Length: 147
Image 1 (cartoon, rainbow, N blue to C red):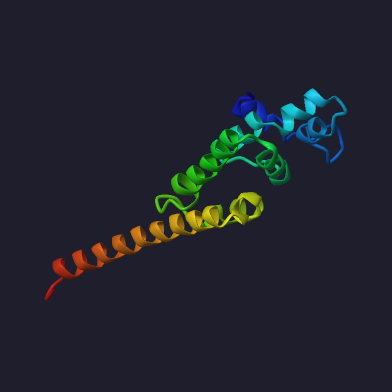
Image 2 (cartoon, rainbow, N blue to C red):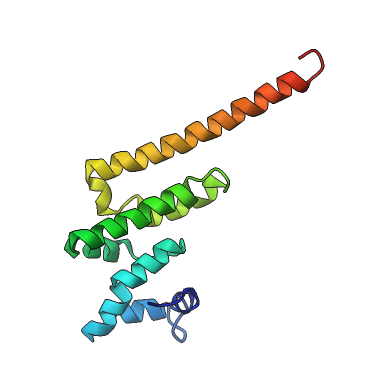
């Protein structure tokens, strides 16, 4: 498993090219090296750290993996959505680009149960925000003059 520091180093450009270390690893003719850069640990680590990953690699891995690994990949995505992407404690707008680029296009959301679960997470988080807004409004009304 690559550390966060190692994964961030993979985004460095090679020489004066536009190719990253990550790209070279993925394109390597040595199958074992390819597997490291396209593999389960690499993708799962990136998801858990909210880092960039290749959605095509995720889709291939998810499609070709045993049920247990599929479930682990799905849980990592749903954990990212609940704890980070849709968490009202963070600026949700700042996560929009990451979600569009890396999450919303994943094949796992072609399954209606996964899509519905994602939609329900977003709805619950919006309900939480709405409830906080009502509490603040009520508190302000109670503590204001004439309230």
